[in-house]
Image (cartoon, rainbow, N blue to C red; front, side, top):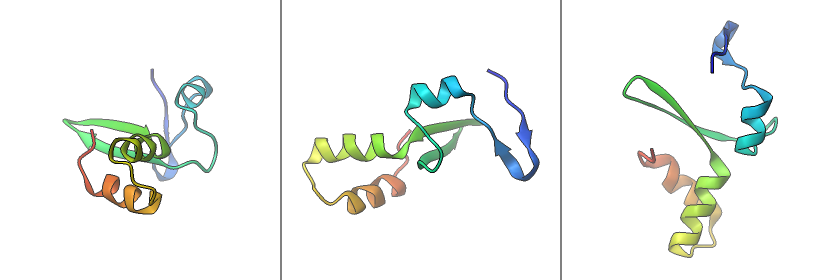
Length: 72
């Protein structure tokens, strides 16, 4: 899918992508560059999966852990 990079580095995601990822304006995503490609994942999904896998209730701690790792 081809999209245009606008002034200031803004990339507008098509509505179909927003719906598929469950994103809306103001939601956070994790962005990573790997092997010359941009990878984007919804931040909440990663934190929730991590929380379920290690049974922690501290979502802020989980977010900090996820942000510090190479998660992709």
